Length: 32
Image (tube, rainbow, N blue to C red; front, side, top):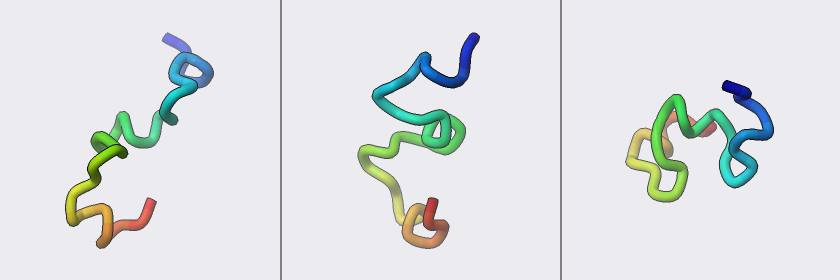
């Protein structure tokens, strides 16, 4: 499946980690 353009609402980065809407404490430790 096409990784780019398939999800215009959200990039492929959060898909590998988790929901970008409510990031855990890990998000503060690792700024994406």
